Length: 294
Image 1 (cartoon, rainbow, N blue to C red):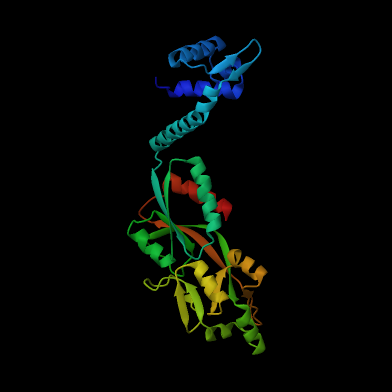
Image 2: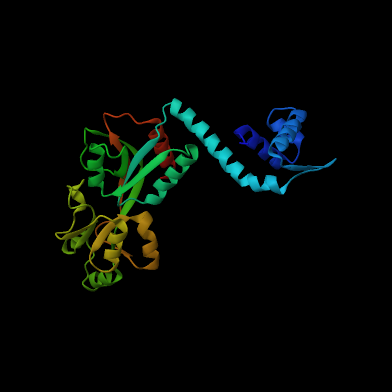
């Protein structure tokens, strides 16, 4: 015999509520109907699901053994019901999101986690790459939306929404910081004499040439790698404060101090999508969640 969803839900309600009357109220049925349904089910299965006494009801080992499987099946069926309802109102089944490699991913992933709690059957692809590569992928329809810092140039083929602001700070290794101090170099212009480590891809044009301060620079398409390179004394880097603050605390990196300006640049964070393509219901909801996180 095959158990159907209604029978599984009935068994679980009785286990959770502890008696037929409470389960009947939860299911909007009369207690006698619930009791009869369980008696018929036990007869068909030739198994006893509940031990009954005058003032007590207890699930048998048989009922407890099928309980985990029943919960999983019922949960999945409810998720499927929800998903089908969402699809009927315009929810897509899959989205692809790009996150710029120099972003603090923690805030963005927290928003994605909240989204899948709302839409548990939604299929999400996450792409992490330098901003220039994400821009190219968006143009090729490989991703639906990407999150990156603002560019100095507006692209008429893209639309954007401000999610928040991240502060970027110039960082250097302790050894290099001491060298600058010994030579009394503490102005912003001295950065041009040092090698700069930037998070970018050499295969695409930079989204903003203003990020280049030094005459010499090395590329890395990975933020963690770029930070490690600076810690090893290979150059200096401009990094999100929310990420490198812990490196400052451990003194594996030093936040530079300038005599002629402050070390900190506020960078707007944008969600970016094609101008010809209206934001879907799912992406609108995700952007709202990101705005709260950031």
